[in-house]
Length: 144
Image (tube, rainbow, N blue to C red; front, side, top):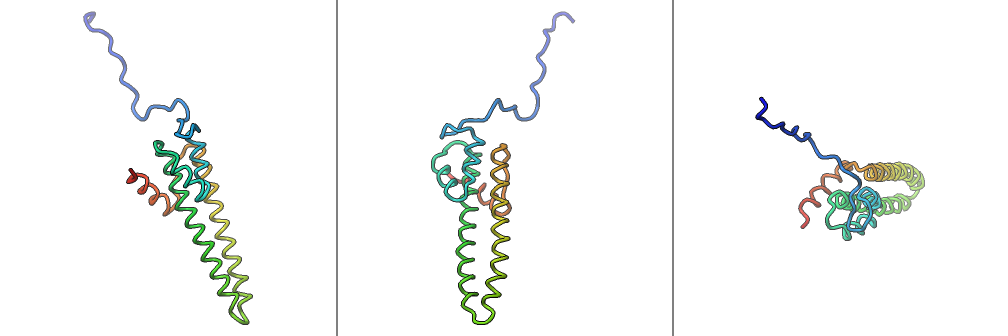
């Protein structure tokens, strides 16, 4: 059939490949800005205020704000528990010792989650911290 012109092949299905990291409002690549936004509380607040367009960075910033707030609340609660246990005569020293071990393990868990989130952000993967990620996603999606 010589009358028909050859047709172009259909476009590939799925998302288009990214040509490189996107630039954010800060001028940083998206993955670098998201990794810096993972700094608990402070990094999150700074990048949530500065970044207005990149949802990837805003998600990690909001997740960092919530995560940093949880870590701060744990530190305050831990100090209160430490003071209360320390005031108990007789067994207070033993309770403080055991609480210090538990608190240290929880701090290590916070640190590990922070490192994992930072690595995931730097590699361009959107990773939800359990319980915190869905809250952050909800906040970012409803923000103006």
